[in-house]
Length: 94
Image 1 (cartoon, helix red, strand yellow):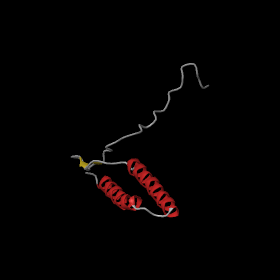
Image 2 (image 1 turned 90 degrees about the horizontal axis):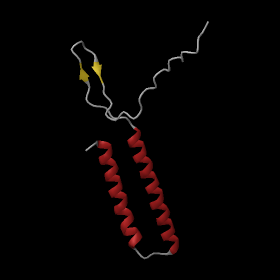
Image 3 (image 1 turned 60 degrees about the vertical axis):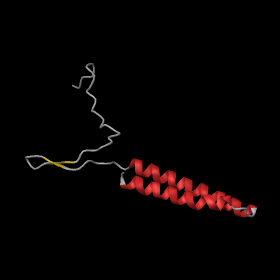
Image 4 (image 1 turned 135 degrees about the vertical axis):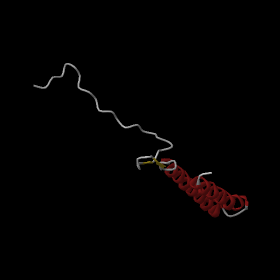
């Protein structure tokens, strides 16, 4: 399991463990509102963390070629480089 995914899973379980008993208790309405806001805030924070982890590129182990070049291959290439457009045949530069 990826280290970042493990950290995210651990944080999620930790927050759920904290929020579960706190929400189950019978408390004053003001405290319930504060708890709901805290849970919503932590949920948004974890969603942002998840988006950040997914946006970080992941690479395979480096490969050393016989000529000494080192290749770092991306595991999840989301974007391919844009290819330059060739000029249309009717566009002539004089």
